[in-house]
Length: 397
Ligand code: KET
Image (cartoon, rainbow, N blue to C red; front, side, top):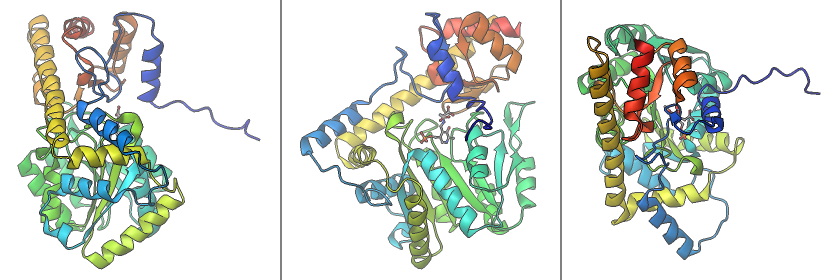
């Protein structure tokens, strides 16, 4: 029945993480998957999350199904987190938010919805982007193209080329954008660039689809929602899928949400209905434990500030690692500019290392990066950063 199947080549990120787990070398370093590790190399359970879970256990709530669209307390808390509590669009009932199975679940539900209701629309993603974006949209039956983004010559952004490409798209084209902490490059738009881009998107009648997976890892929880709030305040119709995997360090809980900002409450009602239909025929309803954690952490007056300071500590540790790596490399490989390690934001940096150099790092030094040269900076620690810098210098020299 199934012997004709193509073998699965494996996911470029998840397969590498599996290979790392099997590597017996004790000094191995995992800079592959986008997961935050603390300075001891552990994936932390945040104190705010642990306390939320203790409260949930004590409250002994039922484990019945959630509604298709998820837990109301969680959905409301997510809206306030993304859009700010006093946005008029929230009060006008123009925004619908569903709790989803991670942001991956949200991205795919949104893509399935678009395929059904805007069947002529095609999608444009940044060159490069998270590999799974293309896979999800194509999996939904949507044609996927790229717009210029990363400038390998400068380690920065090809903003003018990006705008030129988007300006030429037909109205209702889907434009996938990383709201902050671009994966894989770490290169983000400035606020002035967002302002210009949002004007262009509105003028051309394009449909922005924001992926916000690293809120709090760029400049701060509110700062990283700049693009979301700008679009909402300018009256755009747009979509945002957001994740708590990284910001609450709850990867396996599958905590995420999908929001649609609509023209009016009537349209929002229609959108909610069809999103529910899409979820029902996929996974029916989202996980209850994830909803409990997110709602409690975001709304409890003690847990919320505790979480915010835990996010700040994760962000600051990554920044410190960027500075350390930069300092050691600048000393070891004089005459080469490593400034991009300092300007790139969030969990990732694009190192500029070639696939062959990445292979050498893994084989000779047990340092794992994605083959594109993407490095998860959060895998660095005070204990391994010198050795990683030494290994980089070795393959670059
Ligand atoms: N969007 C982006 C941009 C992203 O990097 C990830 C995960 C997700 C969405 C999915 O997150 P979720 O846990 O479904 O809410 N990225 C890391 C892990 C992975 O590939 O699944 C990564 O890039 O390493």
